Amino acid sequence: MRPEGNAVKVMFVGDISMGEYYPSFGHGPRTFADSGDIFARVKPIFSTADLVVGNLEAPITGRQYDRRDPEKMVLKVNPDHASQLKQAGFGVLQVANNHTVQHSDAGFDDTLAALDKLDIAAAGLNRQKPVVVERDGLSIGFMAASDVPDNTDKAQTKYQRLDEDFLASVEREAPNYDHLVVMLHWGLEASTAPLPYQRQLVERFYRAGVSAVIGSHPHLFYEIEMRERFVCAYSLGNFVFDLCWDNRLTKTGVLELDFGKQSIDARLWPVQIEKNGCLPTPSGDAITVEQTLVPYDLGRKMDFQQIRKVIYLLRNLHKGNTSLKIKFFQQKILSVLGVGKSA
Image (cartoon, rainbow, N blue to C red; front, side, top):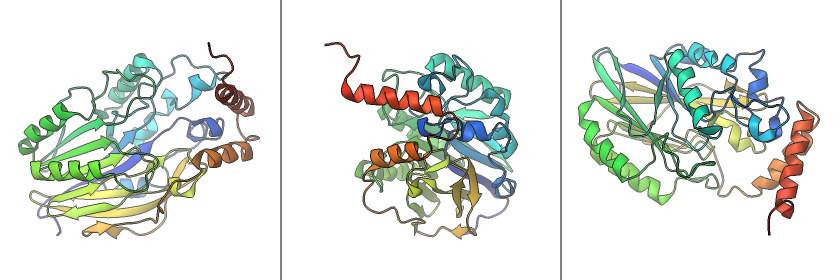
């Protein structure tokens, strides 16, 4: 159904890491952004939207920067590159995920300060009221939470966890807006399909009057479900991320939702991430979402991912910051062997 009257067009994308993962030190998004525009090829699509929304998967901070230490470089976004997000059209970014406090609470605060300076709203702060966008007489609320244990601080209180208090808050807030969008960092990276608990939660959100559920974390682009005045994208996969050892990790898209007063229209723009995960590139015409859309064949299993990752690292060892990659590899080997651990 086409939305009536003046629709508000919001485009959603998945995980955005403008830093670099271990196998890509020196030739991942952080390095690419030194001389190139990460979003250059998708800007023509974004330019037609009233708002672009994504999941910011890496902290924006220059704190404790050390090119000799893999752990102080991994997934760390250069603050000088943050403006590319604004220039691309992003107005709301989810910060509730398991990497945003990876470089300390102070690094998380740096991220919020960088977004605030760019006038980009952060969604998913602990106990945060909905981020509200009002356009053409419509009110759209955005809430976000993570169901993934944090990588570095299991007891963190910076971002919102997906718990019963959050679910109750969603149910209270849904009637207060023309549309409420719930963004969730959830699921399992090893799974090629949504888990049963995710499907159960989606039913609860639907009954509560939520208009859209937008998922992230598995790094794969799952099915999209469309119902009357409701859409669910369980996982939008990666959008900028140098996880390139499996081709399934580089298949993504831009989910376009046109919000009308009483309806939602959905289309998917297929995208392939090129240049070592640095450059999202349109790969086809927009596809109308009707009922259930499965854009990619993900197979049944994510077998041998660690082996694929090691092969990718070794094949690209000569690129970029070779010494930093070697140091990371040595640390991993010693960790596996138990060297340096106390008895």
